[in-house]
Length: 319
Ligand code: SF4
Ligand code: SF4
Image (cartoon, rainbow, N blue to C red; front, side, top):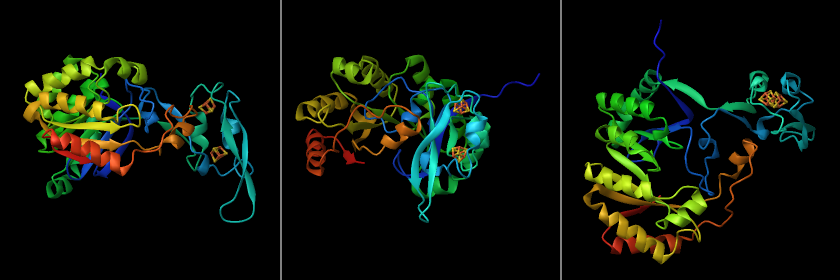
């Protein structure tokens, strides 16, 4: 009997990425996350299950098509709103999905040629991923880049992540793991020897508020960071700067104090200003949008928090 190949479940793969570690990278986005950040701009990363996405702008309208209505066994697809064509004066009616009736059988995705309805969540084997990322080795070499495994929480698919890291290292590729840190140590420890850099998120130092807002406490995250540092791992600490939640002087005093405890293992601290560009992705999944609705932090505030950490002796960059 043929052995079943190890696969990972992805919601995206981004080539030529320049925001997820040094140089030009392939970033592998795995599905499934234990956290529920209210500002999440990748809601498709949260659930491990494959989900139905509907991108309304791609629907050609039921007058011309309507195939999905006939294909849906649950009667979950109906007439949506009337839109004006972008190219002439005509109008057309897009569809709407009743998520309460939808069983995510994906039959509609099979008949939707413009891919307005599509599955979010694709399985790839380790071999398929390695073949793909190997093609960009010349770019990694020239730019000091490599491969970043991200999510969601990539260590919620621990075997797959470990195997991809091992194979990347065997090919001489620089590796980064973007993690929430909210992972059992038994899954984190084995990846350390194959990870050149941990992109490690810190969101709030007060554990009770961390739990109240994000859904989980932060002790495990702090503890794992210290263990990685003790084991010789290297960090790029990432702080999403979220209005009111974690942008005060007091918050940054606490961040700085903890980061200093990690010593030389921290190469740089990256501040990621909150933005509200992900709302449309929530609509595509038929979910209620992010709970947080706020303006992005001002440039002055970002510079002030950067300086605050620099004054504590840390190297800081703003994304
Ligand atoms: S099959 Fe696709 S393009 Fe056709 S009506 Fe349905 S969503 Fe629109
Ligand atoms: S995925 Fe949902 S909307 Fe699409 S055919 Fe199945 S039940 Fe209908």
